[in-house]
Length: 297
Image (cartoon, rainbow, N blue to C red; front, side, top):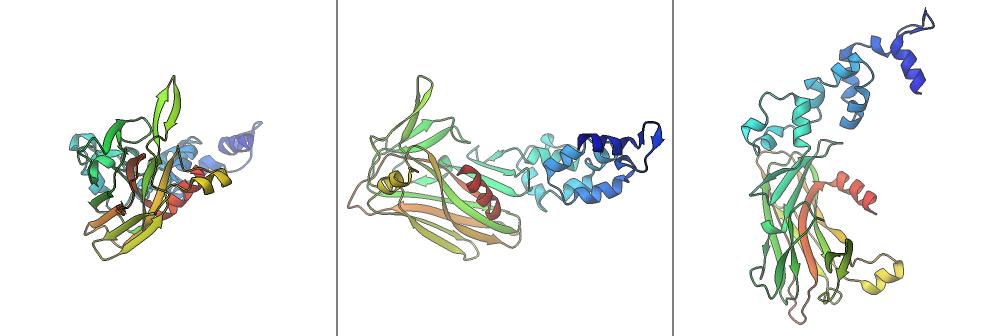
């Protein structure tokens, strides 16, 4: 294949002309084709020849990969970060996490689709009893997008709430909580998990809910600890990070900004529960989340 492409781009082989090659395709035609390709594919093809390289730098091509309201994301950055940037460089800038709200939230563009993704730290959530060290602690970690996660030792009334108002582009989004049963740490360079405080999650399920400013609602009940069932299937939920999908919501237009409220609760005071790490909340385009879930399995 490489040899074939080489001959096509040269247009001359063994001193005889073999007809038009890739190098003869007008840059405008290449740019039209690039409109239908993913950003990584465009960058790979840019190495073929000058016409492809020129088309791969076209503002028209990269503007088609940016969300219509990409300026809203740029506004989260200091103006000196994006002076007179090309659309290609704007895409590259926005495909890296952009922190906001004192660094407790991040937003970025998926580098394959240009779709908006968001992560919300536990620090940005309202957690009942978080100030009381008898119940909750903040523990540093390298396993999160953020520097710390919230660790629950033991509590009777488990309640975590959050809210985000953001101009999401039109689309279908899925919201999920990233949780971990057990406390993890490193010992002699190896990852170890302690389940000393892990209890109560197998008695009754946790209720997850979300609602939007335009009246959409979703909820589900999930049992976080099904140790017997998981051990039988060889796929334990303990000791690893899991994303629990709350539901989906639809955005018709980025203006006005969509407000999303979300929560997880287990407020049955007949038993205590503990040994749970709360990392963050993810909001991804639904089809993108489905692809991520397949990759993580």
